[in-house]
Image (cartoon, rainbow, N blue to C red; front, side, top):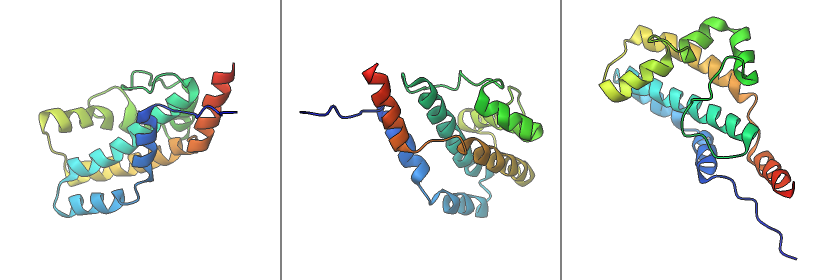
Length: 153
């Protein structure tokens, strides 16, 4: 009897691989050492974005999200983070020009730079935010098991 292999979205596998990268901290340190604060913070933002998308994918188990259009403070994951530290939540993901989310767009698309002080503020908040949302992240095998259960319905 052939057992059907569980296949998640390719982007989910790539996301897990990216999160398993343990050298990101060294890359951040190298960028900070040459005053490339914008690029350094983009590495942390990428990890936040990947984690948020994986969390959403686990909830829906449909298409892997391409955009963060599902972001809502009422979403359980973000609600917990917001209530535990609203100022860090707002600095990272609030829909305003000062948030890391919007600053990331300006760094990537308009080539703005950020100061060492801005980097320090974002880094503290980003580390906290990432740690907070990562607590909800399930291991890859749980994603596969959930996909199997969904297929059997």
